[in-house]
Structure formats: C-alpha cells, structure tokens
Image (tube, rainbow, N blue to C red; front, top):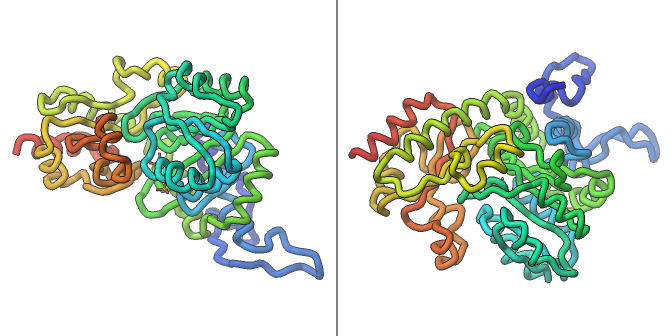
Length: 378
Ligand SMILES: Cc1ncc(COP(=O)(O)O)c(C=O)c1O
C-alpha cells in the first residue's frame, strides 16, 4: 500500500461485531479474564489497549518499523527511550535540539550518571571524534529545532553501525510522510505526536518506533513498567489526525515555501532559517533523504521591537508554544521552548531576542502573508 492509503488502512480494517468503521475508543482500564489463568487478548490498559494497539500499528507501518509504542507526550517517549541506557553511558547529540530534550539530558539523565556531548551532527568528522568506549548512541533531530540544521541520516547510520551505537532520530518536524529514518538506517524514531501526527493542537502524544524485535522487547519492558502510555481517547484523536496527514503536509509544505520566500524578500528580516532554500547548508542532504521541507521556518529580525510587534500584532498566526497543527503559530524560543538553555549558549547559537520560530499551518497562504505584512508595515 502507498503511504496515503496506509494512513487510513494500515491496521488491516479489522471489524468488531458491529462493523464499526472507525476504531472504537476502548475506555476500559482492565479486561475480564476468560477463565482462571486465561486472560483475554488484553489484560490491563497500561500494558496495552485495543485503541492504542490500532494507533501503534498504524505508526509502525508509516515509519517502516517493527513496533511503535504510544506515549502520553513526546517527552514521555524520549524519557522512556533513555531508560535503555545505564549510568555511565555516553551519548552524542545534535547541539540544536528541542529545549525539553536538552533539559532532560542535561538536568535529569546526567544526574543519573549519563553524559552527553552536543555537536553539529551534520559534520561526521566532529561526531566521529567524540566517540569513546562509553558511547552508546547518537541522538539527532533533522531538521533541528529551531535552527533547521540538517544531518545525514544514512551517513550517521553507517558511522553508528561501525561503532555499534544506536541511532535515534526525532522525526517530529518532517513526519514519515516526508522522511522515514528507519529506511535510512536509524534504530529508533521518536515523535512528538502532539505536532504533525495529531495535527490539530488538541492532544498531547509521543511515539517511539523501533527497527528490531530485540529493541521492541527491551523498550516494551520500560514502557509497561514506567506507564507513561497514551490514553484511549488521545489515541483516537491522534489516529484521526493521521488520516489526513499527507493532505496537511502537502499544504503546509506549499505554504511554508511561499512564506519563507516572502520573508527573505523583506529588508527587516536579517536571516531566514528554512531547509527548502537551495543555498541552505543542508539542502542537498534534505533533497536526498526527505520528500519535502516541512512547515518550520525561523527568522532573525532586525530588532527586538519588531519581534515583539509581530507577537502582539498577528491576527491569523497565533502567538503560542507548539507546532505542527492546522493553525499557524509563532513562538519566541528565547522565552518559550529554549528558555532553560543558558543565555550565553543560546545567544551563541543565534536564539536571541530578535529570533522567532514559525509553524506554518493550512490556512490560505495569502492570508498568512497579509497577516505578517500588516505587522511589518504598522
Ligand atoms: C522536536 C520535538 N521533539 C520532542 C518534543 C516534545 O514533545 P511533547 O511536547 O509532545 O512532549 C517537542 C515539543 O515541542 C519537539 O518540538
């Protein structure tokens, strides 16, 4: 089946006794045993639940993985994946990452005895130079949040395999519609399902998809033990979102290309971070490994005053944290997603008081451009 069809039919359209078309929300914490020592297919919803299984099977099929686990948020997924590693383990991660992942690595996992090196994972030599006997994994976002840095998944996979490391890819920004890391050699794919997969800014979710039965078993143990699994109603919402993922991503991709080009033409915009520009450092890798550029754009503006004017003045775009939904959002990373990154480090990377991140939605692109224009020209 092609991807668009999988979004609707990946789990084989099994029917219950009523022939329900959509997967029923199985709002039951527990399941009655068939006999003494004979459980039903399900026993307790922390371990598994029919609505969740349906969603997990869909996401595993879309990512080309062996098993997907659905979590209560993206951070719950990442936290549980990190349990695969013992104290003393060393991980090399992209230097530009979602702030919550940085906080987890620096302030939680490192207290548990793990250590991290952050580097430009687009530079293979730099990554290789950081590998040491304790290194267990490479952890990347590509494109990264919020600087849109690109890493070559296939090349990193070859490096990881040569050194017996796991390659973990956060695929939130592009989704499997545009990029399938497991096909490119990744071992674990992570999602904030809150974003494009759900797509409607109405539910939190996370996923970890693995490429082997061994990893499925190891991660499955932590998943059922830690219990940060996704509740049935949220599973239903995310599944419903996935049905229109290709349509939304196409529209978002189209809108973002137009908006990025428009922003680049404005004298008030000093720099536009967008992977779809031919002169973006990661453009050729993007073309090779992804079928689209996605809907994320960051900008460095001429002044803090303009950044604040935009945040206060937009009418169609909404000033809110998060991304990947049908509504276009603008975020001030300095005060929101990356507020916990030390100021010096943040500024060194360009995440300053003139830096905004846009998540382009599915509105008519002319309305979005008009919305930005009216604040630029106020
Ligand atoms: C790239 C990326 N990964 C992970 C997360 C965490 O996901 P959640 O907010 O669902 O916990 C986010 C959240 O913004 C994100 O942008």
